[in-house]
Image (cartoon, rainbow, N blue to C red; front, side, top):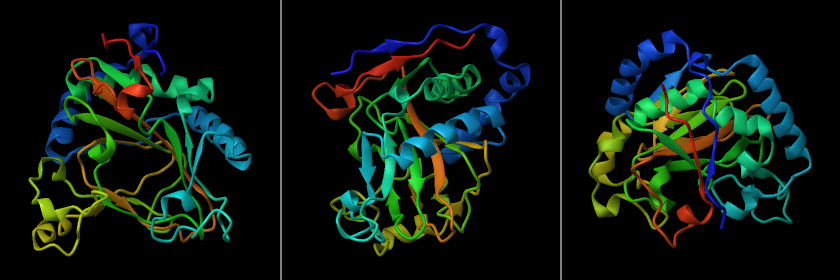
Length: 274
């Protein structure tokens, strides 16, 4: 089991006054829609450093990784020894891979936003996301409508996923789609299959699916979304690998349930925003 970690508090001047002034509006939009997009939030220097590390480690399949073939989602290779079977879906445990990932995940401006969305000081879970997400041409799979909380075990389900685009994300390469407001939806039991994907053919799902929205992102854009928000992603029809960095955060008054995977990897305490 990984012991909890702490990040030293930064100087308060690291957070801009413009960002602080917009926090109330961002939090209101987040609670209404279940997500908020922060355009051009990460610097080019940050994106370049993360991309260089990600591509180097992806080329060498530096462990721990998750392979497309192991998940068996639509469009994935049938097996590890099939064509495309060595396609990596995720570089896992990004926090421990390089300081650049730690610097990004604990960036004072980012933490300030996350804490505003959570309404309290934040902790970063090392058990969930904490990865570089890839979407390869040809062998990158399609991900159906789901909520991140399906395999997460916390006292309360209110977590925030932070998704950083390291390149353009659009209809060509498997853009993320969301259902605004679905983090507040009340579902019938039969609306979810055994893997807790939304059953699109269920009559009660039609109203939800009528409101789907693609979230096109550019390099440096950050998507923050509620872990209960339904989202999906298509396949990559472009000629380039799509790369994104994802971390998840929970409030200090929340906690992973003992004895579950959510508790087994520990967490990182982040300094409270000033």
